[in-house]
Every structure is written in structure tokens, then in C-alpha cells.
Length: 269
Image 1 (cartoon, rainbow, N blue to C red):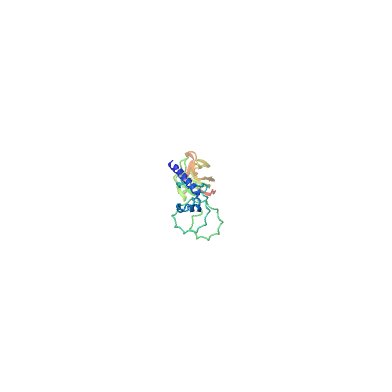
Image 2 (tube, rainbow, N blue to C red):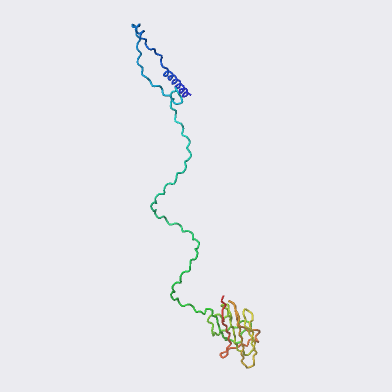
């Protein structure tokens, strides 16, 4: 409030000063006649006055003195960001940096397309001798060493003529098929003291029967043969069919009873 009053006071003083400066004083020129008549009394001369410059008038406010400068205003609000400048020219390539540490191994990519077949290579060196080409081999030929075998169980032929592959088991009297295929079996038996009735069995089923009637004081012969298909693991054997009246199978140093079997050809798939 005091500041406002001070401004008004300064404004009024300036207005009065401006009026006095603009009005010229009414000074009469001295009369020569009077000077002559009044020679005794002379009016003192006024002292010389220094001319003063008229006060500067502020544009828009004539006859007013300039006021006291005001205090600086507060900072205005920041303006909006300007637009992005244009991209500068491309700089020169910098120096090559140091080699960084090795990264983790990435996942395997998908297999590419097969390329064209290349030219045949040079022949290799000769290899070692391989196994025999007769891989599928199976055969046996066994003879009887006892007389009158027990009926209704496999006859155990224990005299070996050939059994290199051991596919015939002397302990059980059975042949076990090692490879699926076609096999040939035969038996030749000596008949003495009793009639003989034997059967060739495959997995508890009879394939063929042979019957021979004993003649008093005569040694007789009987036999049979067959070709049949076996699967791997099938079993084949010879046994007396019936009771003890049909087990006249005989063997000694001069007479043999033989059971034989072998693979004709395997199943190749």
C-alpha cells in the first residue's frame, strides 16, 4: 500500500514540474524612455539562467515522469519441446573392438535339403574274411544205445553220429527248431522180441505213425520219413505209442536204430 502511494506521489510531482517547464515567463522589455526618466533608480539585472533541457516524454504517457523500475517477474512456464532435428551425416567407422567372451551354444537348426549325389569314391581296401555263408545250418543224426524204451515218453538217442549245432538234446530226446523253415525227419529202427508202434511228434501232436509186427526168431526193420514246416522253438521227437507190448525197438553192436533230422531251407522275410 505504501509503495502504491509513493508511485502516485512521484507521478503528481512530475506532472507539476512538467507544467512549470512548459509555461514561458511573461517578461517585458525595458522601456528606454523610462530608463531615461528614472535615471536615479535602476532595477538590478536578473542573473543569467542556464537553459534546461525539456523533460523526456515517455511514449504513450506525455508529461509524465518514468516510474521506478519494477521487480523482475517470475520465470514463465517451460515451452513445448521443439521438433527433432534432422539426422546428421554418417560418421566414420570406429576402430574394431576387442573380442568378447564366447557365447552359449545355440540350438541345433533344422536339417537342410539333401544335396546332389556325389561321384563314386575310390575302392576301399580289402576287408577281413567274414563268417561262413552257411549261417542257417541245423542237422543231427543220433543212434539208440538201449533196448525196449519206455512207452509214451520221448526216446533218448544217445549215440551221436552228427550233432555239431547241438539242436538235438540227448537229455530230453527232443530236437528244438532254431530257425523257422522246412525240415526233413527220418527214423530207421530195428525190431526184435516185440511188436513196434512208434510215432513222430511235433509239440505233443503226432505227425506220422509206424507199426511193425515181430516174427519169431527174426530181426525185422521199420522206418518212416517226412518233411514239415517248423517255427522257431518248435520241438520234435520220437516215442513208443501204446503200452509195453509195442516197444520192441532193439539196438546192439551189430544193429542200430537211428533218428535223423535237418533243415532243408529257412524262412527268409
